[in-house]
Image 1 (tube, rainbow, N blue to C red):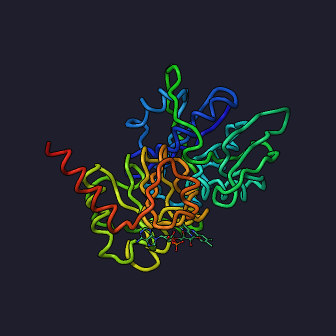
Image 2: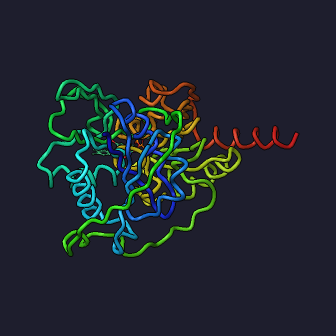
Image 3: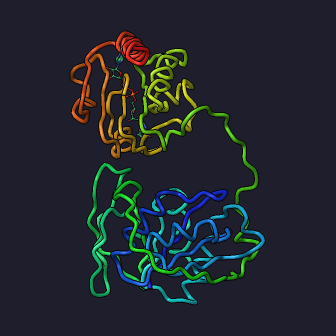
Length: 320
Ligand SMILES: Cc1cc2nc3c(=O)[nH]c(=O)nc-3n(C[C@H](O)[C@H](O)[C@H](O)COP(=O)(O)OP(=O)(O)OC[C@H]3O[C@@H](n4cnc5c(N)ncnc54)[C@H](O)[C@@H]3O)c2cc1C
C-alpha cells in the first residue's frame, strides 16, 4: 500500500497534494490517503478522482488546527498500524515539516522535493530539487517504508479512473509535546484580488522599481490582466512589498501562465521561484541582465516608461 498525506487548511485541499497523489499512483497500489483533523466528506470526491481507494480520517479534538509534530505522530502511528511501502506528502513547507517529524520518529531517511521516483527492489531511485531548485540531484532512497515529498509544480495533477473510496477513522494517541507547536491564532492580511500563488498572470518588481510608490503602476498592469503583484527579495527587504509577496528560494514559488519581471536582474534565487511559469516577459534597462537568458520575451528599456506604455495600450484595446 502507498500512503499519501493530504495537505489541507480550513476545508481547502492544497493542489500540491493532487500532484503528490499523481506521482504516488505510479509507485504501487492500492493508493490510500491520510487526512488529519478534517472530515473526509468534502474531500472524498476529489480523492476518489485521483485514485485513492481508502481515506484514514485522523480524529482528535486537538487536531482542528495544523500542528506539525502532532501530524507527524499521527502518520507514524498509522504507518505502524498499516505498514505502507511508501509514505508521500507534498513538498510544501508543511509537507516537508511533517515528513521530517515522521523520518525522525521512525529513524528513516526522507527524500524531500522529488521530481521523479523510480521504484526498484528495496530501493527507490529519486531525482530531487536541491538548493532551492537550482540543481537536480539523483539519489537512492532506502528504508521501509520509503519516505518522500514531491516538489510542487514538478508534474501536473492528473485524475485517474475513479473507483470507490472507503473512509476509516483513526484515533492517534497524542501527548502534550506533540501539541507544543501549533497554529494558535490567525491574522489575515487584507488583500484584494487573486492570490499570488494562484494568479495566471504575475507582475514581479525588483530593485529597478525603486520604491513602494513605484509599484502602483505594476499593480495597475496586474489589475488589467487579472493578475497579482510579487517582488524580488530586494523589493521585500526594502519594505516596498510585504514579505509574503517575495518570489523565489526563500519566498513563494509560482506557476502562472505569464510572469512579467520588471527591473529584476534574474538571480538564481529569484528564478527558482518562477520556474513553473509558462512564459516570462522581462523588462530591464540592461540588455546583459541574466533575466534575458531565462525570458521568452524581452523589452530592453526603462520600466518606468515601458510599464505605463503597456498599461495605456491595454486600456486602449480594452475600450475599443
Ligand atoms: C540564500 C539566499 C536566498 C535568496 N532568496 C531570494 C528569493 O527568494 N527571492 C529573490 O528575489 N531573491 C533572493 N535572494 C537574493 C538574490 O540573490 C538577488 O539578490 C535578488 O533576487 C536581486 O533582486 P533584484 O533583481 O530586484 O535586484 P538586482 O539584482 O539589483 O537587479 C535589479 C535589476 O533592475 C534593473 N533596473 C534598474 N533600474 C531599472 C529601470 N528603471 N528599468 C528597468 N530595469 C531596471 C537592473 O538593470 C538590474 O538588472 C536570495 C539570496 C540568497 C543568498
